[in-house]
Length: 356
Ligand SMILES: Nc1ncnc2c1ncn2[C@@H]1O[C@H](COP(=O)(O)OP(=O)(O)O)[C@@H](O)[C@H]1O
Ligand SMILES: [Mg+2]
Image 1 (tube, rainbow, N blue to C red):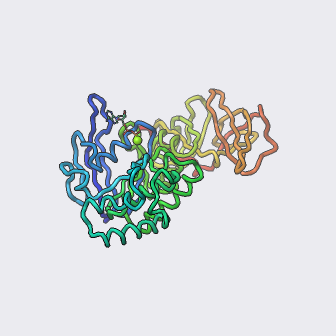
Image 2 (image 1 turned 60 degrees about the vertical axis):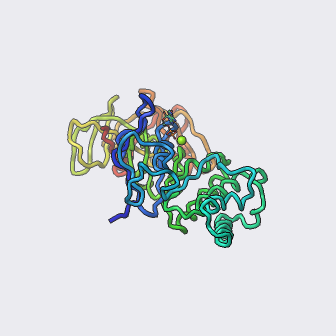
Image 3 (image 1 turned 135 degrees about the vertical axis):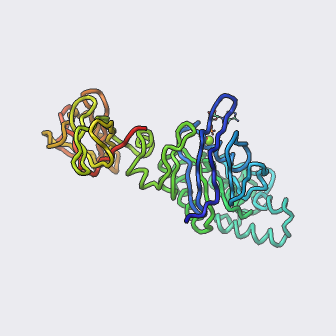
């Protein structure tokens, strides 16, 4: 049985008339790296702030370490928050910034020294203790903010887009560092981002949010391979979505007619003739031939091919105007702009989405 360290049960949040979080259930396991992922405005920060105690839930139950925390002040909850803006004290040195929580808690001076030193080593900032924040780079400042949060030894660290202000290269480096840190300390991380690649890189599980509702909560692998909705399929990685109606089912192979004509086949469970189905096919496994093959009849016209270094991206269009993406590591010299191709795929390379 998983041990839950944070539990949200039927949590709602209204800002005036605006129903921002809707009947949210979320159980976070001890020691896991859980990411709240979704577009801007979907409610990620609000969820984090309710766990931290900076925002009150309109109703519902929030537990940290099995205890209800709705009436507890932020400092009474065994959680700490790291913000995108760092929120360091500019007039204090790195040492004093990191030591702040311990100083307020009147921890003995010797112990403070010891624990700050430990943190400086952890975030690789030895020798920086005398600096002021404005003498440091963005990445270094964020490391100080993380050290300041971790020095209190919280059970849960809440991070709200902590790498958002950093440039791409530093961001990628910090993603790996943060993940290592989390594994080493075995602290639960609840991480907020709108960047799906960042979420995929770091998380044990991802909660994909849309308009205050969790659309899917699962491992990165599962979410990529088996997106629960069209929204998830589009938000996580690239995908080609083909809408149709199931015509026949043979074992676990479904044959369907596309809404705009044409036929397709895929492996899917639980569908019966007449059901609406959307085939989600990733660009790297979207195939094509010069003539239709059995079970498929989807005509497309090649628009262009772009080389982006790691791969060739081919863009084609269906007769209804829908764009189709096809990614390959090698260029197919046989295919040119304006050519007609016929789309197809291996049955198991498509995933059948059932819209709710
Ligand atoms: N203090 C607030 N007062 C009123 N509305 C707010 C407040 N904070 C957030 N909202 C609204 O709640 C929704 C979710 O916001 P937020 O949780 O910040 O989203 P995200 O972090 O996913 O971008 C948005 O519509 C936002 O405008
Ligand atoms: Mg936010």
